[in-house]
Amino acid sequence: MKYEELIAQLCEVIKESENNAQLIYDNAEMIDNVIEGLDIPLHKKNKISDVISNIYGLLQNQDLHRQKIERVVNFVCEKNDIDKSQYNLAPSAKNIDSSDETLSADELELLIKQMQA
Image (cartoon, rainbow, N blue to C red):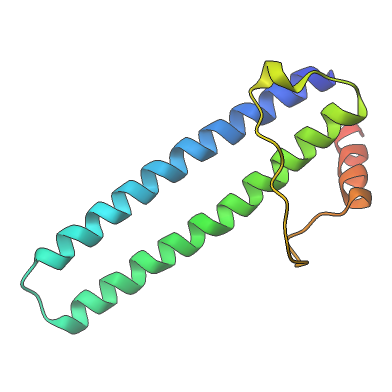
């Protein structure tokens, strides 16, 4: 598989992930708004709100994975002189803190080598 084919497939995953995340967020927000208008006990509203909060947490985690894919795609494009404009890529998100979710350049290279194997 050529880099360009790999990048195209990963970009499809990124775009689908973004679209699905937005739909999930919109639906969760709508549910939250409906719950506010219901005449149910406060403890039940709080329980449902906690579940919605968990959904938002999962979306945030999913978004971190999407950003990792974007960084890999941008890295592959840069290292192989591939024109990113044809893939409609956003620049990779820059993390301002160091965390376990951050990939170093060495980790990116290792990941790419594993994909080539």
